[in-house]
Structure formats: structure tokens, C-alpha cells
Length: 436
Image (cartoon, rainbow, N blue to C red; front, side, top):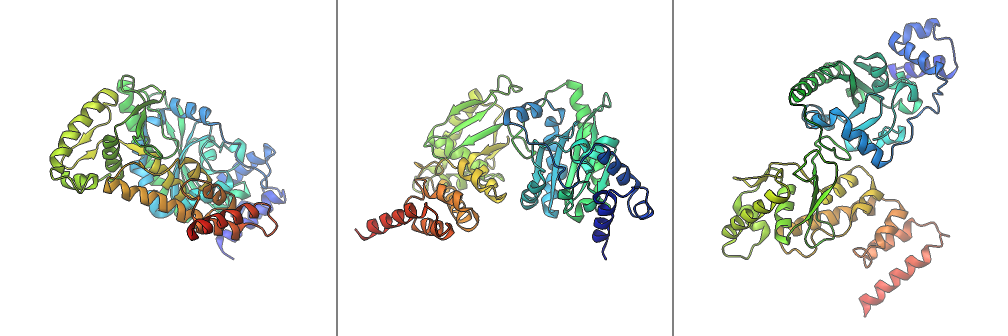
């Protein structure tokens, strides 16, 4: 039998059957660190079959915890050191506060989706007192880095996963600020993973020390991920677009500040946000218009006007030149829809989709983005969504006359579903319109 099966048997013997943890088999086969954590978990009367994270927090409470947590100020460093590489190895990175509450999660989208089955989600409580033995909770309990492999977890829900976690300390006071966790398959507990996370934590604590010299306050964090841009560009279902973010006069404010954009400025910012590597003047001009004889000259004049407008509303949003590029992280609502689809969060993606991208724009580059988002939404929902979500999509203006969507709904609905009549009527309406 393999190591995994042996671990499962030992877990069942020590916890499932409530055998004495001091038995010879358990003593020989289970690490002391894990045995002692199992004992603490049992003393708290946790059940390995039902132990799971507490319900997630409401959005306002989660945002409040994020805003006041010192680790919000080093999220970009975490992204650079860990998150960018985690997805390549099928891993996710989580940051929890000093109580074990998960505040940020990013990394491989498929692993994130599977981890939701064990309630490893933003806002959940993964302290040892709540879920028993786990890397983030037990690392906080012991105040040092650890690795927990599959069936070493107290909760059976977590047995498909392995994890490595290291606490982060205030470099001035020594107080625990939180914990960094790597979760996934066997790569999460590879020999090099713990030293990697420890090195990342050392870099984070050094960054926190540097920040403490000028006592900066952390910026409000994104709902998920670690790049934490404070600015959102909305382009779905609107002719003009808008920028949302903290007003520049108080970069520490958590209030949302919204400024409408001209159609041309919305197009430029969307194209630069979509093409993060930057665009030459010629390329950007061609994405904006393929008909104007003086497109580049017109673009340069428009960039002067855009920078002047941003200097008033969002001076922290900077646009570089040669090539034109955003020097500030700007998220888009269209990009969020694609990320939600990638995670399999179909209902959330559909709710976030408020219409096509800048529907009044004739810019070729914007038309490409509009088609990409619309087609990705349609194709993903047709292939993977539940019938309830697909019916909601069919009811949108965009899909109301899409016979393929309605036929897919009809195929997915149970034979005796009362909703079939309305679907059949919609298909008949479409057929009648086509034959008219």
C-alpha cells in the first residue's frame, strides 16, 4: 500500500476509531507534531467528519478586516514572490490574519474551485480551533512554519490536499500578523516549498520594516488576488465607462470615488488595461480607428487631454510612453467576468456581466475585446453551466434570440419541468421571426 493509504489508515485508527494516540502504530507512523495537533483537536471535541471552516464573512466585514491588516500593504510583494509561480505548479496561495481567517486567495483557478469543497475560501476561519490540524491553523498555533500532507489533516474534507504555511511577524514588535499558506497537491509539500515560503516571509518582513520607517498605511485590497489595484474601470453595458477608486486627495480612504469618462478616454484606458505589455502609438491608433488619416497625431493630442483629466481625478493613475502603457494597476469589470468564468463561478460571472463592452464603440480593438468577453461567456455557459444559470442567461437581451442557448436549456431541463413550456414558446417565437 502507498504512503497516502497508510496515512488514511492511521488517521482512521487514531481519530475515526478514537484509538489511543499513544498506540504503537500511531506513534511509529504519525509525526509528533501531527499527533499533538490531533490531540488538541480532539480535546476541542471537533469531529473529523464534520469539522469545517466557519461561514464566510459578509463583504463589509471582510473589507474592514482587509483594510486594517498590515499585510494589505505587501500584497504586490506576495504576488511577485509566490502567486505568479504558484499557478504553474497547480498551487494556490492564501493569506490569513493572526486568527486564521483567510483574507486573500489566489493562484491556480481549478485548485481554487476544488478547494471550495472543503470551504477553503476567502473569509473562512481556518484556525486549529475551528478545523483542527491544517498548515495555516497549526502554523499559527505553534508559531513556526510547518507542512501538512493529505491525511495528516484532522478534517477528512481536507485529505485531498497538502499545504505549507509560515507565520508572518511584525518586524518591530514581533507580534504575529498572519500566515502565508501554499495549498495544492504534492508540490505543496515538496522539500523546497517550505524554504521558499520562509524566504518569501523574510522578504515580506523586511518590506514591512522599511514601510514602518515612514509608517504608511495599507491601501484597500482587491476582493481577491494579491496585486491589489485600487482602481476599477467599468466598461460593461455603458457607452462611456467610468473609473472607480479612492480619491487621490486621500490615498488611504476606503470610500469609492467614481468619475465618468468620455467614450474615447474609456476606449484608450480599456485597451491599455487589456494590453498590459503596452502598445506603440501606431498600434494603439490602429486599435482605436482604422479610418482616420492622421490617427497617430490625433491619438497624441487625445493622450494629452486624458493625462490632464487624470491629473485632476486620479493622479495616481499614470500612463507611460514608448510604448503607451499603464504604470498603475487598473482592473476592469470585463476582466473580472473572464476570471470568474475561469474559476467556474458561472452564476457570479453572469451577475457581473452587465452588458457588452462599450456597446457604442466602433474602435476595432474594443470590438475585439467585446467579442472575446461575449463569446467566452456564451461558450462557457453553454458547455459547463447549470440549467438554472443557462436559463438566466437566456433571459438576457444578448441571448434572448439565441436559439442554440434555448435548445440547450430544453435539453438540460427534466422531462416534467414546468419551465419547459416557456422554453418551447421562446423557441417557437425565434422560429417564427426567422421565417417571417
